[in-house]
Image (cartoon, rainbow, N blue to C red; front, side, top):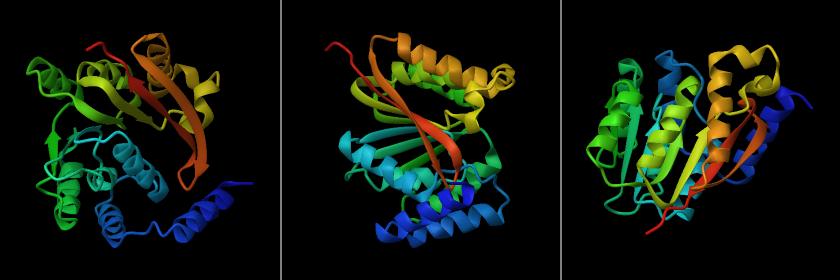
Length: 225
């Protein structure tokens, strides 16, 4: 098995499960035309996030790392009437592309894209005591993942689901050379923090597919009433 086989399998699953969505195809094309990096989730991963949101009964979703808005569209589709998704993006150009994709998808009233340093934005949200989120998707600079996790916990409630993306780093998570790299150090600290925190029941899975060798973490928060 190799990368081409993984891509072919993803394509097969997308076809047989009827996952394709013209809005997402258009969003992806717009991202490519704008020259955004191809770091967004795959189609089947986007549907997985949508299912997580529905399983959690999410009415409020926080996304850390918008890129072109692909995953935001996937998760926003799971929200009930009156639901809200807040997505944080540090790059203004990426945010502009995302907002257009979200507008074309008919979700501008559902999704708010907030531009600025995610850490600073999260600190402001915590200080302002915004209502807790039901699902939090962490998909930004991996070196800052420990900071994002701390903020996510402060913005959670009992039962909040926290998903961390791209945690395997193409296998570099276990490479001796990779352990000195900021994204790997951040990811390893992120996982260690999850394991130590008694409020979290967590796991992590490695995946292969159109996005290569990677994986995600999944945690649920337990807080006393």
